Image (cartoon, rainbow, N blue to C red; front, top):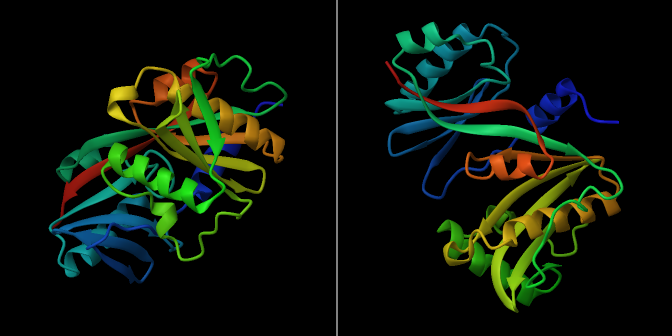
Length: 253
């Protein structure tokens, strides 16, 4: 049975991270968790109980400004700030700087079958220290930074819930991707293809391999917070868009 919109949005909201970039200052100030980098604060989580998004926004702005930030980024569209209207944001000088689509696919037998993968592309799961080194190298070359998951203090190659994959074209590693199994939901993340190999099937191969693996380990749903570059591809492969996470910038008083 296909997942409902409420189920997918609930799983999206449960996908929380306290990751913050190297060199940033991470703060937990009252109900607000955020980091500040070069004068700009990014709100990670709101742990309070107030459900009025305008009051929460104004309180967050005051807290982040007190920590030295002159501007902030918040996520609008779902969660704490789902109820913020355009007039409220406009009056505060806000603007959308990025849109991430919430897309998902209900898994079943043959969820990957319709994805055509060129024979020259192969995908294997990361299983050895050498595989991890290769995974990290491709990620750094594709993204410009090493994968966040490898920096986690409790990361283990044999962790059954963290599953990493490398795509190769005729034996040369050209792309990487992973997912985390949370209950029966596979949270897909981190797919990256080396620029000179994009558009040649490696991304599709990584999607198909992860769908197959996730189904085999008991996942019922594949969930992606997809950038605008990857969301159309995923939707062509059968994923359904359920909502948007709009990264919104605003100046702080």
